Length: 447
View 1 (cartoon, one colour):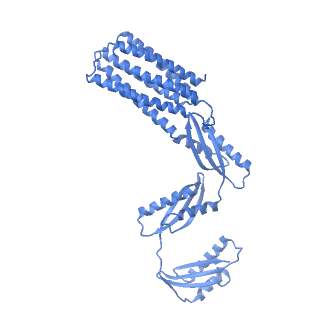
View 2: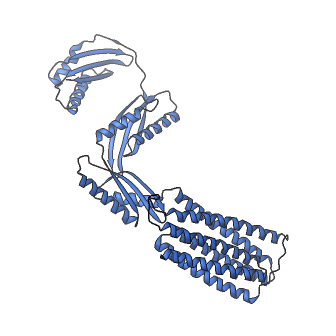
View 3: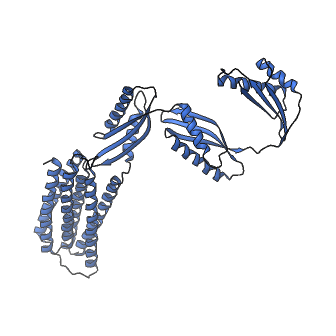
């Protein structure tokens, strides 16, 4: 028999003995508090029996029908225990209220031997609390930890009963019923904590401390590893982690496997005994991320234009900043909601992006304009002074904002885009210098 099952069996025996002692003594002394305490020990017996069978099931290895093992059996048992505790506590509280109101008559006779029995009960409660808690910590058993909580509340309730009997012996018989109410409140509080803790596990609530520890452990790896997704859940005192990492598309299979091993070791160092599965994906290039971000942003309603899209590599991952152009007549609250939709769309399309910063700008209204025949010689001289050749095409428009110059430059097809942009910028700046009143200069480059 495993240490877990031996501890659970010892709890069953101890709970049965305590029920017999408390019930016989309570009935003989007429103590409602002691009878309530016996009922409390009855819930402990049910809890211990559930734990005994749940631990035996939870420690079974994984099989074809339960690929993740049987660890959640402990949490189901603990949830059942907590529900039973609540039902019994309500019954005890109702009986105590009835006695205080005078609806139920029961004389309390706390003789000396009653206190001697209660001291024995305290010794038993204390010993099983220590044993259960120590074994629960050693084996990370949720069911045994639940038992330890029950035993601790049982010890407190026994001490409360002793206080109530002392008050009754001193001439205040209501003290016994007040002690019974205290026991009921104590049990309901403990049950609520158990229900919340075990429901969180059964619902796969992410353990925030464990998630933060795993993220920090992976972030400290050198060379760094790009984490695309990290998911954690717990069952039966064990943590299950799913991690998706990105490696260079040019990396060999062995390099990707080595990166996965380093991630697995890092998580298991901070979460001992955890089951870690690492999936390796090729990391996207900057151009691919940029394309996905831009496409995602443009799918959002009212987004007409975006520019100044920048990717920033940080220790926590890739961040994106961009300028969004929206209709100028939109209220700010509506525009902000659109920006949040854009951020959500980007996160869905590019999970590797950790943060998105948007700058909102009004979309410029369309300007009426007409073609005018401005003297092209000044403009041509400006272009020739920069490029050494005449522009392929030159047009001027007269708008409400002023003169707009449209220039097309012919460049070699092998010229780099960055060099073409630099030349177009130089031409634009020279034309603005020659024509100080110009409203705008648009320089187009083509092979």
